[in-house]
Each structure stands twice: as C-alpha cells, then as structure tokens.
Image (cartoon, rainbow, N blue to C red):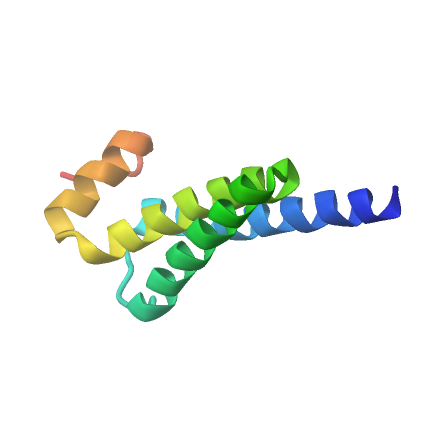
Length: 103
C-alpha cells in the first residue's frame, strides 16, 4: 500500500514537473537556453521506461512515462523547429489573448 502511494506521488511529480517548461515554451516561444542533448536523452529515457513498463505490464510505469515522453518530445520539437514553425505550433495550442496578439 505504501509503495503504491509512493509510486503514484512519484508519477504525479514527474508528469507535473514538465508542465511549467512546456507552458513557458508555448508562451515565450524561447528555447535557446535549453540543452538539446538533455532533451534528446529525456525523450529516449522516457521511451525506454515506457518499453520496460510494456514488457513488464506495469501500468504505473507506462502511463506517466508515456505522458512525460510526449511532453519532452514536444519541448525537443520546439527546440529543433524553425521560428515560424514554432510560432505556428504555439499559436495553435494557445490562441493569444487580445493583449498578446502580434501586430
């Protein structure tokens, strides 16, 4: 029982830890200070953890790692694409409010 609670808390914190970075990338469209190798390793690590979870049929490993892999892949994609593409992606995800619209 305690192990399950610890696992759920760890999964929730792992997933939640990526949300502020993803939202900041969407909001600012700035990724120059992000280290590309770190995000590549993150995506690969989460993909491997997901594979491990699938092979062991462990849903508490699969679910948070799939979500973290998607968030890390999104951040990596935003790091690698051109500025116009980054703007289109961010605009699609978060329509700017009246005070945020660009001229």
